Structure formats: C-alpha cells, structure tokens
Length: 268
Image (tube, rainbow, N blue to C red; front, side, top):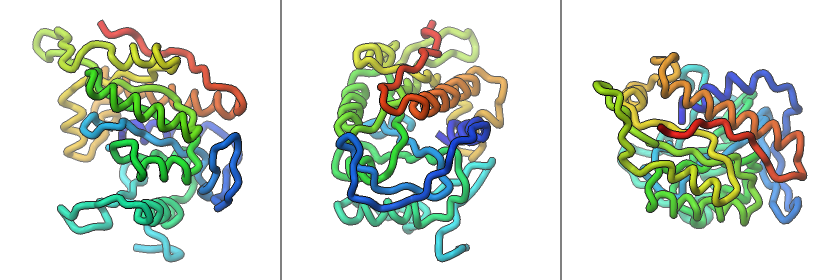
C-alpha cells in the first residue's frame, strides 16, 4: 500500500479543509464512538481485508519519529520489537499499541493517515475501529471465494461500528504474460466486482498481479516511482484518486451514504 499512500499524500495536498485535533471523549454520534482524533491529521482511513496474504500491508517532545521515504511517513509495530519476535494482540495491549502508533508518534501535518489493519475481524480490529476516528475504510480482497468470504466479514464489522466503506479493491486481479500479453485470471475473475455490486458498494481499484510490484516492495521503491507510466502505476493512481473523491464526498455529504462514481474498467 506504500504506492497508494504516496499518491494520496500528493493528491490530498490540494484540499484545504480544516485540521482536527485529537481528543478522548465518551460521546458518540449516531451510535458510533468518536474517541481519538490526531492533531495535524485531516483524514484517517483503515485498509482491511479480514484475511491475511491478500496484499493490503530519535525523539521530539518525547514522541517517536516515523521513518520516511519518498515523502511517506511510516510507523510499524515491527520497528518496535526484536526481529522474529511474535506480536500477540490481546485486549489492553491493543489500546496500548494504538496509542503508541497514533498520538505517540510525531506525525506532523498529514493529509491522510493510512492504518494497515491486522487480518481478521476480532477484538483487535473492533477496538481499533471503535477508538480511532476513522474517516472511512477500504476493503482489499483477491478475487477467489475464500478471500471474499473474509472480506465480507470485514464489511459487516465496519458496518456495525458505523465506519463508512469507501469501496473494495481487487488485488491480484489478473496476470498478464509479459511475452504474449495474454491475461490469466489465476484467482478467479471479477469476484470483488460482483461482491461490490451485491453489497451496494463501489469497486475503486483493480490491481494486477505483476512482478514490478513485488520487486518494488522488496527494494523499497514504490512502483509509481520506478515505473510511473506503467499499467500498474495507472491502477494505483486511479485507486488513490477514487479514495480522495470518496473522502471529499463524505465531507460534502456527512449525513448521506456515500455514492461514488464507478471509475474502474471491466477486466478483459
């Protein structure tokens, strides 16, 4: 998701809406808790799948300084524990980690803070969703049924905690042979699109299975930087723009259910 985050940051600089300060409160709006807001962060979105393996993933004022590359700031629990150490998410530990990853980090001014949610729909995911002031959520899935079933649980979870879903992203949608240009739908075809239509949501991105993404992830270079004119870079750009459009529409119509324009061509 680093490529998406980089694009979101550049696109959202064009927005001029007010910046919110974090606060703790026991109040709720429409049944949804509004616990934690962060100073300098305009929007927070969660990226979730319900399933693992689908491709979603010095100090100042006593706060941690996030690592930064290509203009994208990042903080991870993996940076705070020893290599290969397991991270067991349990009740109170979730809140402690959430506090460290949010108000315990010197984020500065951000257009969008992207929260890469741990897989599943259990206590950790519900706690994060209820206690972090989320502007919206993006559901990521591969096209096959087993992944879509878990994505469906993620949709239900966000619905129950009253977090708007900006849309679905189909990752690994197809593989295009670099030699003959024939498309192979390894994990099935248009599964996320069909689920989006069934749920009344929008498909906001289709990301192909491509070697450049894996290579860029291993090398720490976003594909939108290494191959800015490629098909996969265009797919990430479209996804980022659709997320920005969705956040803007939610701000313009805070009382209405989001109705984003479908901006993804059918797979061929």
